Image (cartoon, rainbow, N blue to C red; front, side, top):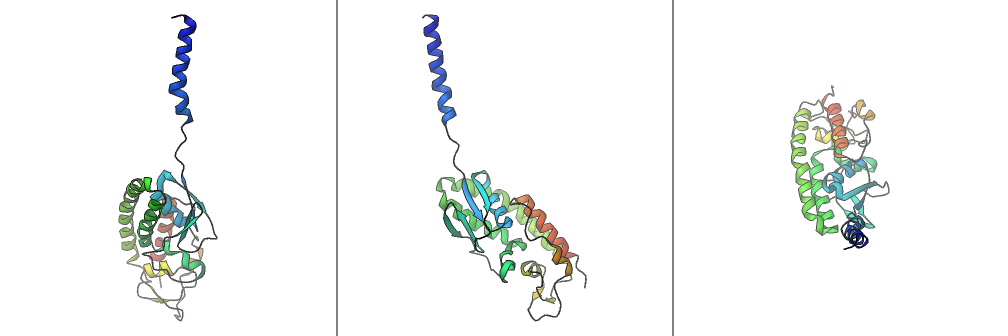
Length: 210
């Protein structure tokens, strides 16, 4: 074999092995729109690297959108309050794992080939998270809000009830002033940001003095 023929063979082999690999496209990610960052955090936890989360403030409470399709993920959740307060159901962290199940089911239907992956991601985050919820509940057990009748003056009905308060419109006691300084949602649509957000809520509710 001449040197020229040998070089042609090497080039052809390189093209056969390398060029097709470069041409392989990465699997498309599911684009999931959510109403706010707290819901986005749960979607990101369940979907992992298979999803891209976007915030869409026009979505209704309990809705997410995958591509162009709207999905209801409010099953298993008891929605309370009105206005912006109604959408803060993840202020009660016990709702996060319930939402996670709903999100896993919706994602799996949208991308059946990734169903097993979503199942694994859900287990990986929900089990450790459930232990954190128990720790937060123990922290809230000592709150002065427990069994107290309170009017929800800061849109925090889920947090108030998680802390053991009885929320009534006619109650004379107002929500603790510290609640007015709490953020409306996590700083980002990530599990870490959501956990930091909940920790701040729990700290505010558990240190209330009356």
